[in-house]
Length: 177
Image (cartoon, rainbow, N blue to C red; front, side, top):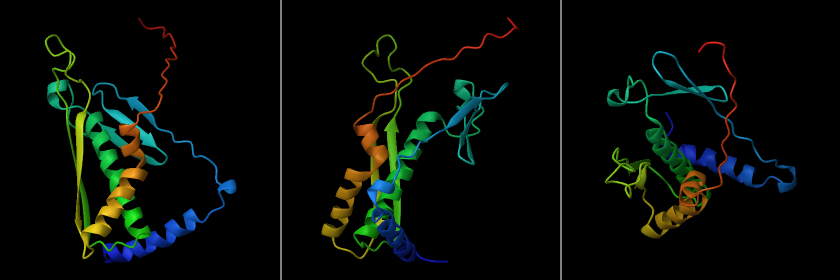
């Protein structure tokens, strides 16, 4: 089994090659996800490319706890993105890593927005992360990677600087009433 540092060598080669592409030959990528709710359980089946993730609610919210909830997936997505960008920036800046783990926490108050709690957010908030890094590098090198991650992590920056989002409904009337 290879070490994280061996992987960082491979990551560095890939990053240098990717960064060396002529910008005139690179096209924007369309990201897509399809989500369906299943009958009898309400489980949400998320399909992204050839992958599938199941999302569910805990029992106290009429779920079967068959997978993480949507807010938990949001934190997981942030953690995955942060970890990936830490790897990329460590590879670019040649920061050796013996181990890397990112912990994400957030608060979700079920009382949020309800009478008496109108000012309490009903969405995940107070989101915070800690990157646990084991490296022989000095604090300055680790700080440089952290600063690069803060600048370049797409999901982190999306959450810090939300984008416009549109929604629509396409209603097909069924025969059953």
